[in-house]
Image (cartoon, rainbow, N blue to C red; front, side, top):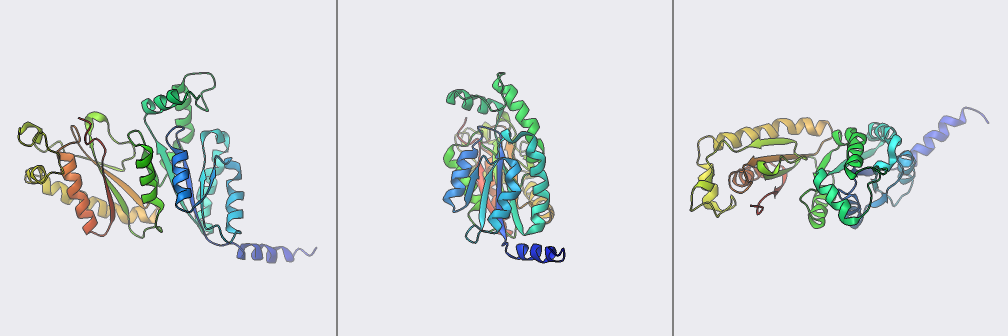
Length: 302
């Protein structure tokens, strides 16, 4: 065989490939990967669940040569072990090869994950005869780099399956946005800072409507509470600052391939101040042209 034929054949093979949208779903065992996979399937994605990471590149190449396969979701779990280095290499190279990559990492607190494993009476895949917590710690260490580089981190600690499906649908139902997509979340500090937050804002500097007997039973979604909170000194400056902050980081995020940002606004219990400020910030970001969803994580917990 004449060696000069090789480049031509390689070129022909490359020409036979089409562009591809790839969703890489990983995260903690018990955090909802199967639910995310089913949500993607319902949206029309071709989903490969629990595929060995070593086969990821081959699967991408095959999908790019299959005419009817344009959107592929791949679910990876901790059982991939030592092969995750190959995943990192693929993530670094495929965007340069006509593959549009988005990565989702599903997270949950240790307490929530332990409860889920105990209720299902199944061992953690990395438990190896030890405690469930030992398996979770090993898994967090293994997946640390993937979590740090994920486009979307979803904390499922307080989400039910329907809410998780909704979060996946929000992220993947439409074409890739050309502007930043923001989730504005209110929360209560006494319940912990959201682990999936990119930016955390503290509204506890504002007077607490809890101490007003007329406002106490209401929430920040009530116009009376909202007006009260927004009229306090510093409230509008706070909103101006965070609106500007999102504007500053948005273009940098888009250049770096990050199209989703979660802004978490907290107060003591997640009922009054954080809810009112989150609603107001979401309204501003929507007016600025961002695609915005709002989530009140701890509303109703008190």
